Image (cartoon, rainbow, N blue to C red; front, side, top):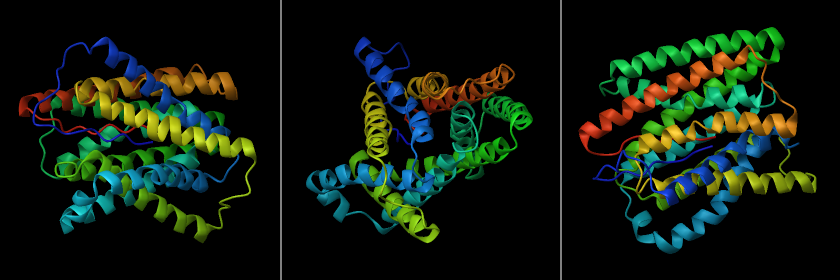
Length: 317
């Protein structure tokens, strides 16, 4: 579930996006919103879903990167290369935690919790010396409060939900770390080169985990192969690629806030096709989480505007 935000020396405008960009963002939101419901509906081992999602994407991206970015890849510094590999490892940990969570908790809860990556990336940035505004800390407190409320509601309904929520939360933590590392790599590495290396490393590590755990990598029903292909196309490529395209012209703050629509979007799709209707008591908790994340993202946007450069990386499952 990952969209890397493009860096540039000029900050994209904070105003209303052009109509064409609004359409593209709507397509991107729809793409990433399919991730949770498709995963929940796919009768394939969770770790195998994580592997195939990245392997299929790598099968398309790596040949393209070799054809168009061969010189860049050949001339990577050792530090940049190692950081790109580390980002791929963190992405693998993110998928290995988040995707299994959908086996234990609802799509709405899992998606909201993993979207807290924006909160955790702020915490990691603070640990590396970056100043964090009061608004961001308020957002962090509101989001964590929402997590506590949601966990209480879910556990009262199902004991497995505690495990699922914990895995989704852990997936968000790894995603936040991935964001911080990826943000450093993107200063000197293009989107095409970075995503090809990152997805390939992620796929290879997940392949090792699948082999070690005995997760079946083939023998699936035709419908499940179709869902894996749809997941790769809609969430991994179409959704994330569209957001990366829009970020050339639209503020990362606006795009990151738009990505939050994934949470109600995924919940709606899960209710329509999987019968997963969130309990009424969970709605305030989900709203608290979204409000907290929005506060953190808006605080990041204000800080970037002051620095005059884009630094936010948005993560979508």
